[in-house]
Length: 569
Image 1 (cartoon, rainbow, N blue to C red):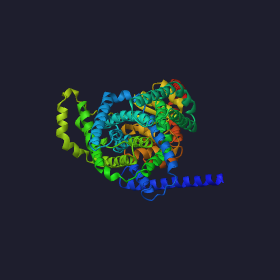
Image 2: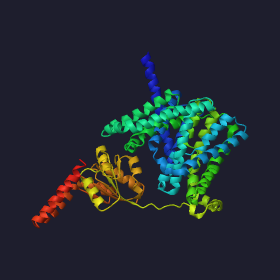
Image 3: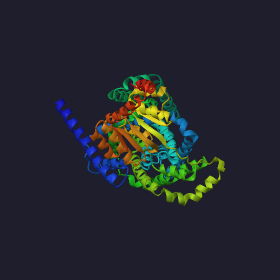
Image 4: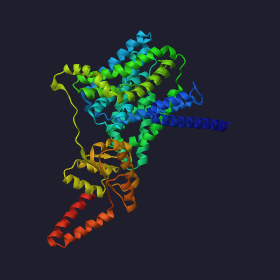
């Protein structure tokens, strides 16, 4: 009987997950057709499946439990991207600017909500929710427009980095209390510091050796990463925090390692799967009953998010001396509510700090503000022209010597994938020609050797999208791949061609038919080793006929060459 009940439970759960994924996929296709963010599609799928419409999901408690794992994977991924060394790079503007923006946005929202008669605890939660912007949406917009290296992008991402840190502290506080007091804040703070210190200690002492031992095996490094995530999540839960906080700290502890980019690529499918369930579950929890009383609050908060907050950020950037166009673009790129605000709302709802109608209001604010961001940025040029007088006035308050303008980035010379034998030969040639090279290799021992040689390098695979993103291919003159797997080279070529990067591509193939496939995909030149070797040997033989001195010189060059290549296995 127990087995029969378990079987029915498993079947129902499988059915519910299948419905969620099928609906999410269909709505996602429709969202992409109309060029809308996928998050909005997932939330809409949840609304359609939930109690207000078709009522197709039966095991909501289990789905919500799975969505908790989704939150954890989302924040684990954010933690992996947040190398704390980058805090030195974002500078004073990002730190001070974020604090000013969050505080002023919070105070403006709090004042408005109190005027509407909202209770102070609920008003404070909702004010925090609207103060933050969406990292994933902003990164996607700048990446899609090939503007990830612009000044406006760096300003926006610097602010978002600091916002994410503040969000995590708030999550750790909200998840451990049902009422916000000085004592609860202090207790949560010191508990959080203890776990954070543990993460830093593991990151600097234990993890470098542990991950180095696992790095040669793809499955091992993936399992070790997931183990770290679940251990930190369990520790966080034991101390009364949300599991998402533990997952974030796990990500931070791995982020400084040279393997972190490869790990991001490996866990991204898992993150996407569970995150989809999380965003659908948000739609499932939406209840429109009683929302009519909040319609004025909705419009007021939406105006604050898409008008006041972008103008505030642009003004802060101008006062820090940044040029008008970059300040405007950075400000209006942040005119939405963060997906992590949804996590704050979900945790606050589960702890009884807010009601279901405020939660539904939050979900609606996130969805609408994300959609409006896409349209706002399409007309950002017109907005800039309209506000140019205001921007000019703010800029005039600063002396001209303080103004910081966009710097044009110089193209990198070469990105080299693979440094084994042929790759080592290419590297030697590039170094002699004094070219700026970034080497990417999946062998950890080879990467360590490159680091000892002071060569700029990354650990990772050519077929890992996260590696390709961080390689800066849009700003590279030549991409050279000595990887022999045709599928990997095709993946890299398609990645470059889809984004229309002005980059020359040189790859290697074992056979003629493979070379033709690579040429068809868009490679600029394909090296076939046995053909090239034959051509090279004929040249060497001709040189050998020129006498003993020539033979001795060629021999010594060959020995030096072989000894150099031997260093890379």
